[in-house]
Length: 146
Image (cartoon, rainbow, N blue to C red; front, side, top):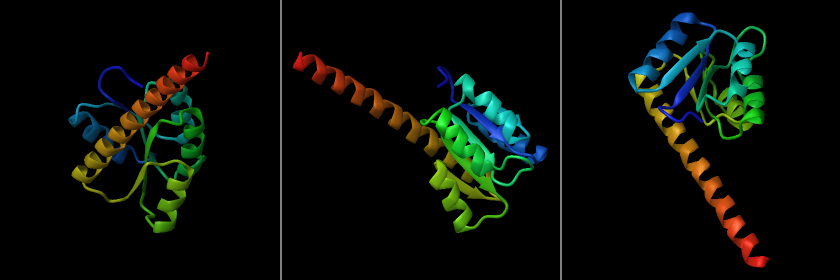
């Protein structure tokens, strides 16, 4: 997780939409990086520099569903928003099942995306804090037994 402002990785094969999402993220004080394909995005994730992944579902090569599943294996705490022009409940549910925090159908409004980003990042921060507290409690309990 980044130490300063949250960092967003946008994986979107449509350059105009990718830039639009990056602009929204930056307008809200987030750092943002755009790549055009899932393999490039997957290559950046091991750095641990990203708090939120926003990915298209349908892309040439590796699709967004596979990217989400692989990204969650690398970083289980990563917040993920899936976006798709082929929005259906089934597609959204598939994205959620493999690890997305949320999904959004194209076209979407900037305020809709920004509120989803905020909620996903807040949820990630709560999850990280919860895990930290659980580790502390486990450590206290372990020490108490010795």
